[in-house]
Length: 198
Image (cartoon, rainbow, N blue to C red; front, side, top):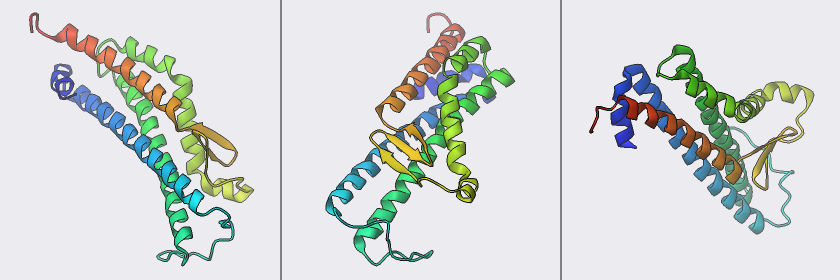
């Protein structure tokens, strides 16, 4: 990866920055997937230990305080962690589209057509991620009309107010496929710009 960053200097400073942000965004996404896996494991462990406990009737909660029951404290923390980590994952996934748009619109790298084709190939996937992030962030609008659920894990998906998105292996594979396609283009450009014999 460091070699890729060094070689990307062939493209000029703005392109270098975009490329480094792509690499950083892929790292952020990987980190969020790892966190979500841990959140899900923690939730499963807690759920097993709290079998029969009524979570819906949790004790009153105010900022700066926690429920007096240790199990409910853990439930609130894990529930918050899941929501936050899914939200951060969606922000990072949208960042992929934003960075791609920047390359295309500002023509920061040569052969923009390759990046346009990449965007077309992943258009539906990127739109799904962006739409769900938008859905999650407009909670105030959802509260006015009524929210069906405030965030739940269903198998390898996350549900919020009647909509679901994959947060498991299928989503990870899409990110990996996108990353591989992106770096194929970058490596092709690097090869074209590298001095012969180096």
